[in-house]
Length: 434
Image (cartoon, rainbow, N blue to C red):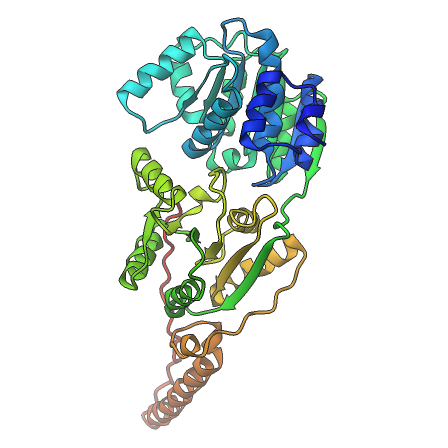
């Protein structure tokens, strides 16, 4: 279906034409008519399916007919990056209209705060906000949402994972009950269903390709030990000189710095991004990556959703993500809009269970790709060295048994009771997640 068939405002269609938007994606084709009718909606759609345009275009069309100088639409998003991205897309769509919008998020300067307060009191047409920062403004008493006609929750499951459930409920209570509410989520766990019952009225339901990787993604899985990971990444990157944008995902902030240092030592143009960076630094890193000044970005899951960086050639999971859905969102950064991409996942012994959950979710069993010979020779404790590890362990155990036998004989000769040998345990620590 073409955008010209939805009956959208001419100014919006002109902007879409300049942006090269001609045919609607499945989520756009199903959601736009429902939203234009005023229907509440709960939609399951993963990263890269065009859901931002799906929920914002029909709202913008309505705004061209019902602007009244008050705040008309509230969009809630889990992260600063996503709020900024949605606001940028709104500004592109509304280039030929007089519709106004602003992104409201934490970590900004005092000048930004004043601008946010002005928009919330004097009325931008659309407010795109993170729940925590918006709640801070609401607590000060000057925000008036009495004229809001539309509330949109984007990446709702992510917002609940972060812990915004109570903030969302409090924010919703500031809006009229007669509003139209739209909830977009990549997954539909029970807490999303609970939230939808509280804030939606007789919603239509749409589900688009939930938790399935794009067809264009080539997924390669390697069994590795930790010492093999960076050399393998280095070798894969060297073997693909035409790859211009590469993301390496780590589940911990601690590892981001280590990976960046190790890849830099091998001569790669690489930067890291995690929640340790202030907002301006994060934006600068993303902008350098987007403009191809930086070839490789190492990130925590802060980048897995919401950042619209096109033409990612390679995604590397340095470790298996903690939940199966995150795997889909991570590799969903590549092969977007029907392009091709490569996703590489490095699985060590501790990751086996998590990776089996991923296989269950996406309904696919993987064969492990063979390690290059020079990488396989790098020693370390992992599934690749289990047999040698067992051999060493058995040797140690046999020595312990021999030593134990001698001690037992000695103890018996003294009339003492033999002591039991304990098994050494390895202390394990968990890094804090971003």
